[in-house]
Image 1: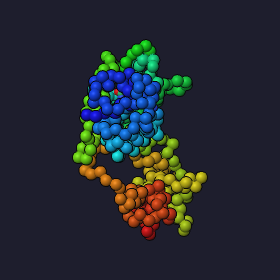
Image 2: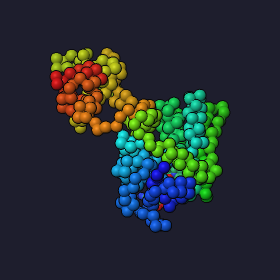
Image 3: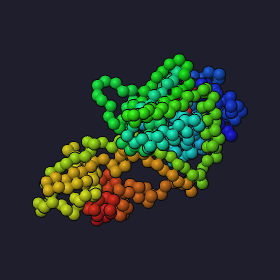
Image 4: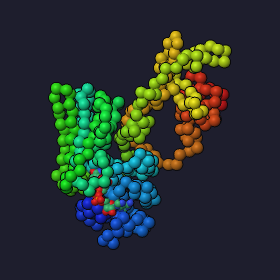
Length: 370
Ligand SMILES: NC(=O)c1ccc[n+]([C@@H]2O[C@H](COP(=O)([O-])OP(=O)(O)OC[C@H]3O[C@@H](n4cnc5c(N)ncnc54)[C@H](O)[C@@H]3O)[C@@H](O)[C@H]2O)c1
């Protein structure tokens, strides 16, 4: 394997470098110590199979650009990425194979599975996560704590993270508190407390040394080497990075007369339970709303996206890698219209606005006449 290492002078970088030895064909570390180039520009183009990144979240754009430009897979072990930086990672994964994990140890992978099982087994239990790390750690809570939360979220769609609870207000049933302790040289401890009201189960993982993490990172790099067409994939995009949380405020009860047509009659053709209709906000934006209930006086609508609050789980196989065609782009833009508008309804159906309306809801065909 030919690997480029970003963050080479850091704690993880040094350990990974020791394991891989001459398999490391390029190093980058912003401190510039030991003669290591500070940037990818300084390093220059190198033919490599994998780029391993254990540096700082702000380096991610450079890391991904280098991996794309040099056609190698990326193993991202760095944590603390902002939502925008995470979006860059998911975007890059369309072009290059990407392995991205807040914790690369096998023990944590097992812990995630156990947490998911326990959360499903005790659906009403209160769950809280506590993580402990050394004082040099710059991000909190840890990426692993987020991974554990996501394991809970896979079986509890309404779970919400509450990082570092403080101030007034009782704990809500669906929140999962995440608490970060920083002390001494602790490599990493993660505890998931599951309290049913009558008993408490604590699932705990403790890292003995960073070597375990370096071994995991190297195993991930070897796994990714040469990954391309024909490979299978199985990954989850957490709801926060997909369609956001489900928000109760999105449920609204409106007077029925708001849905009268030009003849002063209730618009039964478009407004029926289950249908998705375009609505105008006060500032003139058009948003999609799903009709959930109709009474004699009112219409209840839900402004949440149908996938809000849900983690998106993708399983599949790469059968080809090629440039997207203009026709496919059109189909993606107009997916909201069920693909019946021939891609010519103002380009807005996907956003819930196709001029005079998708009569049967965008999912049921666009009737804008185009
Ligand atoms: N996924 C995992 O299992 C796992 C395990 C351990 C650490 N981490 C994460 O990996 C990252 C590094 O951890 P560490 O303990 O080795 O930290 P560290 O501070 O010891 O090392 C970071 C290194 O990256 C370099 N660096 C910082 N910004 C850079 C940039 N923009 N470009 C190039 N180099 C840059 C620093 O000079 C330093 O040498 C952190 O985000 C940490 O949370 C993840």
